[in-house]
Length: 335
Image 1 (cartoon, rainbow, N blue to C red):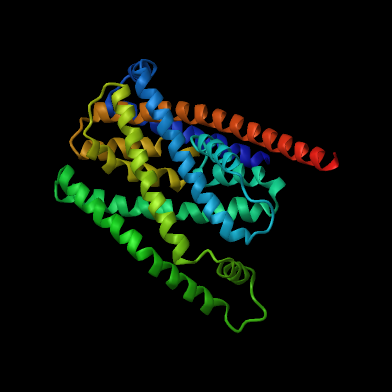
Image 2 (tube, rainbow, N blue to C red):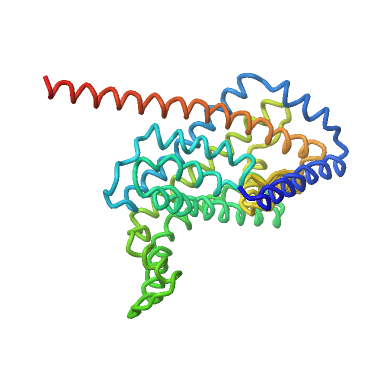
């Protein structure tokens, strides 16, 4: 890492911390109170949060494996499920303090070096499958914005959210066909393709822009959104701040998209401000919404690293078992 990159990371981290401080000052919440709430978290709520985090990482890893099977065209070794889960869990943990798309790409690319075509299978596949998470978050953000504009409640949000999910799942196939046609027009009858045109052509020929891949990826992305909402509910239960589930669900897409912006590492400060603002607009006092938003960062980060540790151990154990089984098979043939 260059000196300039190090400075950039330090400055962005300072900005994120500064935003947290400003949020605490604006809501007049002592940081000691937030820390005390987080440390006194209900143990069973934290266990449930960690299990949900593991489920969320598993769903993400399955999306990656589905994409990898298409993009690799059978070239190189297939990704074992434990390895995919372990790398994804590590990427999610790093994503608490780095842009999630960057942390996930780094973890998966480095982890797939031994499987062949690491850049393509790690970075490209990750960015592609995460695009569907972005699509789901945008549609849910629209549902939340519409609910806030009409001053609706839980039933109104659910109606908007289900409509958005139905639109996403039913329309993503048409979207992929449109993207495929546009890609074809950009690269047709050209022998001297520019670099970006060659990239578009490579994507088109990869088979990624297919409806039979896009639909299940979209469905899993919406399933992950539901899991994320349940995770936020466990944070609420764990720190004993009662927040209706629909209000948490309405705030989640804003927090997710704020993190994707990448202004600060892992959306630090930006996500918390987004969560606190939306919860406050939906009727929760700013004092409580701020405490919840910061506690959510602390507890989610802790759960993420617990899952990452388990995932890493599972991946190593799986590789050891596979190595042992291969060795036993070779010994059997020699005998």
